[in-house]
Image 1 (spheres, rainbow, N blue to C red):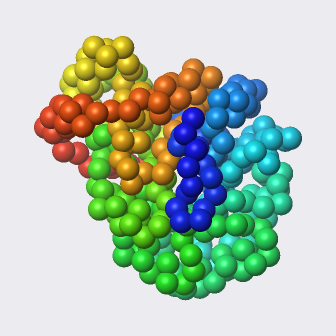
Image 2 (tube, rainbow, N blue to C red):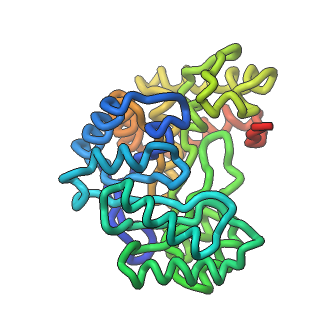
Amino acid sequence: MNQLQLGLNGPVISSVCFGAWPIGGGLGSVDKSVAIDTIHSAIAQGITFFDTAEGYKTSETILGEALKGRRSSTVLASKFSGNNHSETHIFSAIDKSLNALQTDYIDLYQIHSPQDKWPIEDTMASLNKLIDQGKIRFIGVSNFSTYQTTQANTHGLIQSSQPRYNMLFRDEGSNIKFCYENGIGVMAHSVLAKGLLTGKYRPGHKFALDDERRFFNFFKGDLFEKVTTILDSLNDWCKARNKTLTELAIAWVLANPNISTAIIGLKTRSHVAQAIQGSNWQLSKDEMNEISLITKPLQIKWVKDIY
C-alpha cells in the first residue's frame, strides 16, 4: 500500500482511506464483529487512514473499539456534521467524537459541508482553538467549492479537501487541481458511487429501508438502466484484463496525480482485498482514454431525494 503525505507538511497516509460510513450502518446494517474484523484486516494490509464523522451513526464507536492498541499506527479523520457551526456545537461535537473514538486527539478534523449562514472566520477560529488545545492536529473541509476553500484558507491552514470524484461524476475536477496546486491534500469520496461502480446492483434492485441508496437517482428507473449499459461495457473491458469493475473505479481515481487518497467504504475482508488490488493497478494513458470513450455518452447529475 502506497504511503504519501496529505497536502503540504501533513500526516503520512495510505493511498486508500477506509471510509467508515458503511460500517456505521449508512448503507444497511453491518454486524459489529464483522466491521471490527474488516478494520483489523485493513490495517494489516497497510490501510492506515480512516475517515468517519459525527453523523456516521455508530462508526466512531466501532472504530474506537477496533483501534484499541492500534491508534498510534493510524491516522484518524472525522468531521462535525449538521448545519450548526457555532463554537458551542463544534466543541461539543469534538468531545463526543474523542469519547467515541477512545482517543485524546483527532489527526484531521473536517467541516462536513459549508454553511453560508455561519461566518467561515468564526468556524475557523473555533477549529484553531482546538488545535491549540491539542484535540486536533489539522483542519480539513468536505464538499467545499474552490471559492469556499479559498475563503476558509485565509483564516487558518486548510490541510485537506474532500470532494466527490469518480468515473461517472467528475464535477469537482477543477477544484481538485486547485487544491493540489495550493498544497491542500485531496481525499476523493464516493469513489464507488455508493456501490454503483461495483456493478453488483442491477435495475429493479430494492434496497433495505435502512439503506440510503434507495434515495439516489442513479439507482432508479431509466437512468439506472442507462448507467447499467455503460457499466456492462466497463465490466467487459475489465474482464479482458482479469480485473474487476471495483478495482477499475479505484485505480481510475488514483490515476489522477492531484488525488492524495481514495476513500473507499469497506464492510468485509473481501472489500479490503479489492481495494488493495485497485490501488496497485496503474492505468496507462491509453487505458484512461479507452475508459473515457466508454463513459463519454453518460452525463448525469448526482441527486439524492430524501423527501
